[in-house]
Amino acid sequence: MSRKVWLIRHAMPDIPMGERWCVGGRSDFPLGRLGRIQAARLPFVPELKAVQAVFASPLVRAIETARPLCEAPRIMPGLEEQDMGVWDGLSFREIMARFPELYAAREQDPSRLPDGAESGEAVAVRMREAILCALRESRGEIALVSHKGAIAAITGERSKLGYTSLTVLEEESGELRVCDVGLPPHAEPSDALCLAMLRASGADEALIAHCRAVAALADEICVKLKGKGIALDSTAVHAGALLHDIAKGERDHAAVGGLWLKELEYPDLAEIVRQHTEPDSDALNEAGLVFLADKLVRGAERVELEERFGASLAKCKTPEAQAAHARRLELARSLREKTDRLAGAE
Image (cartoon, rainbow, N blue to C red; front, side):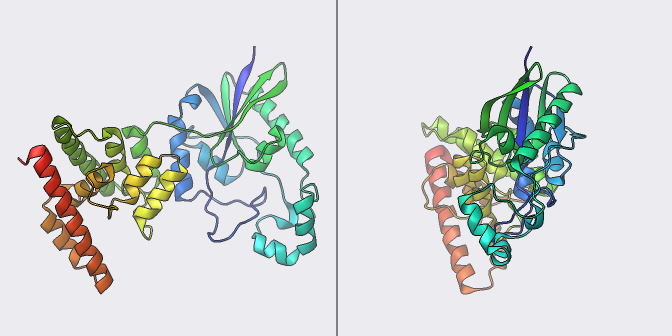
């Protein structure tokens, strides 16, 4: 009887931005904010519901990715990333400066390795041994959180292995067969998933209460508009409202949150979140509705637009900030007038 093995590439680590890095088996970065959000989604991926045991490489980025699936994943030596020797942990800018000849040679022949690096063949051997060991120590379907180079050593494919991608193996009589490589994980944005993602991003209970209040108001406006024959995507409105402040604390958090949700393959929610501080127009669409609902809630309490914008005006210290504030207020007034007129003010 065959058994299914899910190889999961770890989520995005907290690597210094602005450069590419050689992150191998000697480099041990924890997850960053987006990585924690990616990992929080894994328990909601339907394909992983049948998993009965979770294993992780000894590296912290793999262990942190595995924890949402299992609070205490089993640590399995042999699943770690390929050791890249003297290059491990260096930026590629530094590698090009210190090892220009080898760097150029590897462009043509990737089998050329830095001093102290581990061969792909050696990685494949230890990966196979680790997977079979995990199977012996468990029953049913299992998940193993590993790394891009290590998974590629087993499958022979590297390009498809995005963060938290799923690779499927089947084991029968001690033999491993590759079934699928690099499947993108996907889960419908339920309330439970949205809240898990918010908490993984570092949102405190006050921010979560605000997001819930915005979603509740957006839902009410959606229902009123639907009753007048104006049907918006209520699921996207609700989820987008819950997630609108997922990147709170980041500079231009609306743009960053939009990029995160695009990376997570929620393009509709990405647009709602990107526009929640200032929509592209005063069109009464999903993004405009969430923007309006957000501007009618301060903390977890509903307020009038003038009160909400009056409180934020004091933060605008420059002419540019004051102009942006006035522009957003006019957009909110226009959207409020449209919803009142079309849905009927009470």
